[in-house]
Length: 390
Image 1: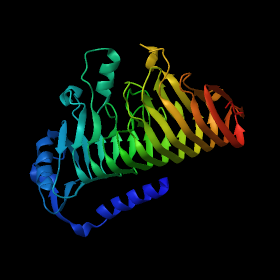
Image 2 (image 1 turned 90 degrees about the vertical axis):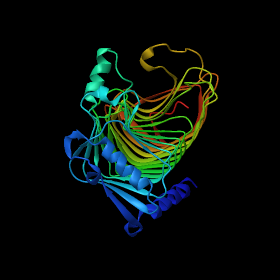
Image 3 (image 1 turned 45 degrees about the horizontal axis):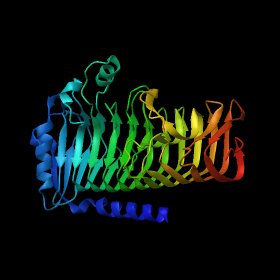
Image 4 (image 1 turned 60 degrees about the vertical axis):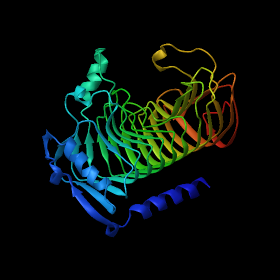
């Protein structure tokens, strides 16, 4: 059923954007005053191109040719009259001075748009100065996510490369029917909070065939995420694919119907992780499938952490109210960088239920790894290494 849903979403998005003959209106940003020299502020030129495309009754293309285009924080706002394809052959660069981005929290923001496709190109957010400010303890801006979609529907992001985001690279928030494919995300392994792709409060998101090397989660999955399909993901370095952290608030939506399949983790801090703070919450995690995964020297290949506390500062020290159930781990093999490859640390007041493990083989230094379980119930089938603690 999940595969049928995903296939329908992909078919819809392909049908909506496949046919160039339907794209009748074209807007080259250079015609609106943009300069491909990497020094001239092209923000207003891009906005003028967007306004023309957004008001077009015909489907439109915004074309960004080869070159380097300097952009400050910019908002592309809808609703628009027809579908828009943003074709990027060049590189969009942020100001070298991170303070020029202000405190908006976003560099490139699409808001209340439908049927938008962003194809190709590179985003270079110049995040190193901001990371250095954070590390110094100085008074810094809030930081900017590189490209964000808020309250958007029927979106495709394809062939995009994102480099050195100040914070998260790609954010999908309160969206429906989104396809992210063939993207490349790059940031140093110690860059703080540079999640590759963050999804929250969204339904029907597909992420496929993408290579993510970053300093935080390769993919982070927040409250309100439903029907998320991820396949052919290359992750590492980074913190793995994480659901959570949940239970930041008491009244919080849950996460359900999430699948990750046919993916490889290399040298990441975690593989697949579910994490929640140890405090009361209405949140939940259910119907999760991790299948056909390879771990290569991963520190925590399989982990549920319901006592999560970032940097062990201001830990709530209570019991997590997040209810975790119906999580399947199937055909997961490879090597752990630590002796304990499986850690299931669940809530004493809301134990994990319905955990299923099938055909797991994780080793440490060419020997079977170890497993640790607390407050969890489930079943195992097939070969299980390390020996199950369920």
